[in-house]
Each structure stands twice: as structure tokens, then as C-alpha cells.
Image 1 (cartoon, helix red, strand yellow):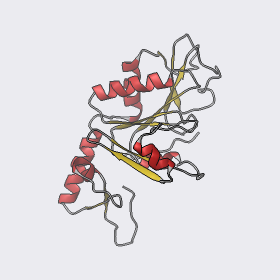
Image 2 (image 1 turned 135 degrees about the vertical axis):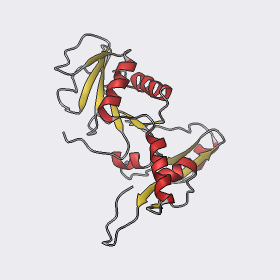
Image 3 (image 1 turned 120 degrees about the vertical axis):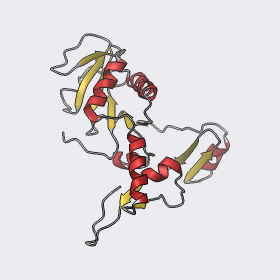
Image 4 (image 1 turned 90 degrees about the vertical axis):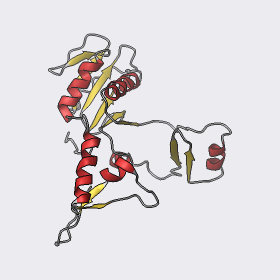
Length: 225
């Protein structure tokens, strides 16, 4: 399977239901955050999930027919988008919607062409190995003895070692956002770049500096940021 290239390092945690994907993802997020990285995550859900259940004001707005609902506070904010029968956004569109990060960890999306660790547990609903079907699986994390078929095999508790492998595979990860902001600041100061912004949104601070792209050359060709 061909591996896609993204402007931000992306790594996946894949496995069948009850394989320990979420626990492994959470512990990897904690580890990379402890190392000083800015981490974003993507989780694929297989059902009609809701983040505003009950009689919250935002849920009432949505049920009344609002196509998008923004919920904003001093601690966090979120935008809920109703698809209303439209197809779900593809993997690339989801990644493009995220703010700059040192690393994006993806839970689910088993078929996504990204490097990933396969999680396995004896309690998993399905035992069929993913690694034998997906060349993007670079390691296996399990709670029992498994034949890795030449791939590294870790205990599900070997978080630091798995983080080192991820860094070695798609890194170096440390300070990526800071370096991008510094490069963008230099580019803006030297007049080599133009600021890109999302319509209707004001970018601030490091985020503003990170979203820049080279100016088009005389031939009219542009480079993606």
C-alpha cells in the first residue's frame, strides 16, 4: 500500500474492537506531551456520535436545524457540523482542518496509508492480524506473545520505546511547530512569503506565523502551504 505524505507528521494506532487502541493512543499522547510536543489526534467513529447530548443549548440549536453550531468558552471551543446525508470528510480534509502540530496521532482509519502500530489484545473481538495485510504497520503492541513476522513487538506498556520508534520513523518531531513559526517569521520579514488565512477567521501568534506559503512565481505556479 502506498504511503501518503502530509505536511505534518502523522502516525496511526490501528486494531480491531477491544484491541486496546484508545488506551494506547491516550498513553502515547501523554508521552509525547510530556516530551514537550504539541499533539493533535483524530478519532474515527463508526456510529452517530454526539458531543452535545441532552437539553444543552447547543444540542437544541442543532436539533432545530442549524447546520453548524459553535460552542465557545474560555477553556475550549468546538464546532459541530451536521452532514445531513452528505459524505463524511475524507482523511486529508480532516487533517487539513487541524491547527499546526508537531504530531497527529490517528486512532482508527485502519486502511489509511500512514505508518501505524497495530494493537492486539486477547480480549479483542477479532484476532485476524492487520500487519499481514497492511505494509504500513511498522510494529505490533500486544498483551500476549505474538509472532511479529519480522516486525518489532512491544508490550502494550512499552510506551516510551514505542514513542522512540515513532520519532525515529517519522521524526525528528521535537520542536516542529516552533521551527515552522521561526521559518515563517523569517520568510515574512524578508518578504518571501504571503500569509494564508481561513475565511472569517483571524490567525494569531505562532499559528499566524506558521500558516504561510511562498509567493507565486512569474509563471503563475503556486505551492501548497
